Image (cartoon, rainbow, N blue to C red; front, top):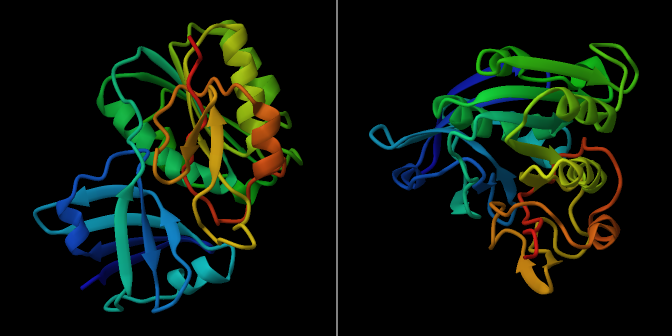
Length: 276
C-alpha cells in the first residue's frame, strides 16, 4: 500500500509529500528516480526522491504541478492512496568529494537537482549553484538550495529576478574565474550541449540529467535510446551516471528538442561518456 501521510504546499504549483510505501526499504540514490501512477491505467510520472526513511518506510518527494498528470498528483490529500510506485530506476549520480562543484538547474529541473546538491554538500564539496528560469516564478526551492550551497546565482530570461543573462554566459564566466572540479547540469538538450561545450574547453568532467519537455506521442514516458560512443544506451535503464561528453549533440537535440524546460514529463536519461 502506498499512502500519503503528509502534504505541504511550498508554492502554488509546488507540493511536498511524504508517502508510506514498501519501496522505501530500497536504497534510492540521487540521480535515480521512481515512477508514480496515481490510478489504474494512468500515466506513470517519473519523480526524483528527496529523502528515504527505511525505518519508517517513507519517501519524501516534491512535485511540480505543470500539467494534467502532475496536477492530479498534487491534488491528492493526506490519507489518499497512490495506485503504484515502482523503482528505483537508473544508475545513481557519482557523488564524492570532488572539491568545488558547479551545479546548474533550470525551471522544473531544479527539483531533481536538489537531492544531488544535498549529497554533494554532505560529502564536503564547495558548491556553486546556478538557478535559471524564464521568469521569477520559475526560480523554485531557492531557500533550500541556498542552505546547502556556498554561492547561488539566479538568472531569468526576462530579467524579473536575479541577472538577465544566459546559462551559457554565466557558466562560462564561472568556469573562467573559479577552479571547478566537477559540473552537474539539469536541463534541456540545448542547455546540456552548451554547458558541455564549455566544460570540454576547460577539460572539466560533467554529469547531466536531460529533462524531457513532453512525453513522446507514442510511448508517453517510455524508453528512448541515444548513441554513446557508438553504442546504444537505453533511457530509464542505463541511468545518468555517465560523464556527459556526448559525442553527437545534434542527434540528441533532434531527438529531445531545443525548447526550454517547463513541461514536467521528464525523466533521467544517459548522455554519454568521453570516448577514450
